[in-house]
Length: 247
Ligand code: NAD
Ligand code: ZN
Image (cartoon, rainbow, N blue to C red; front, side, top):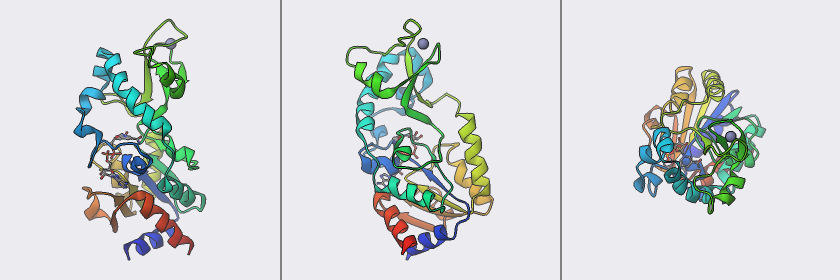
């Protein structure tokens, strides 16, 4: 019944918007931060992922990042990503706003993807600003730790992801909030919805009168504000909703 209601809402959406979090990539083999088996049950997040500790000891950051990068670079989109790309192609959503840095939405065919926390697919020199693909740097990590810029004489490289203590990228943020203000259906997938300002996106949509669908493995603080709540795996739930819309 709830699946049918979700399909109905999306089928009638004129300006649907999706917000995704780490949960949508869990079935691609990339561990989430929070939730069962999440990375933060193993690491202290602020220690591992803040700009302050990065600058103090880049090698320590890269040691953890090397392992996570190995997994993320090998990951492929799952049926949840593919279903969201199909929803965009069919006009049921206009864009995907994501907290993820794995690039799997783009890889699965979503064309308008707003990355609020940057991208893990590239790295950047903190001095000259030149960028390199993460995959090229990943290959050097066994012999070069931390990796350094080949262009400007050895300044340390940093993934183009937003660490704690860094500003959010302005352009995708503005675009995401503008889309949220116009949204009539807000679809939230695989996010614990406790990281701000990303979690403000559904807030803005709700305030503008959007109806909300939440798909997540566990309850979220936004569940009581949603018209439809589905606790399940997004790689199973989203394709089922897409199928019902087409039926
Ligand atoms: P989160 O880790 O805080 O929460 C993930 C949520 O997904 C949890 O509530 C969990 O119950 C749920 N979940 C787990 N498996 C699921 C599945 N198969 N289907 C549906 N839901 C599932 O993630 P977040 O809210 O996105 O925020 C954490 C931050 O971590 C983000 O800022 C993001 O930048 C970063 N991050 C990104 C990646 C990635 O790029 N894939 C991975 C880990 C963390
Ligand atoms: Zn440089």
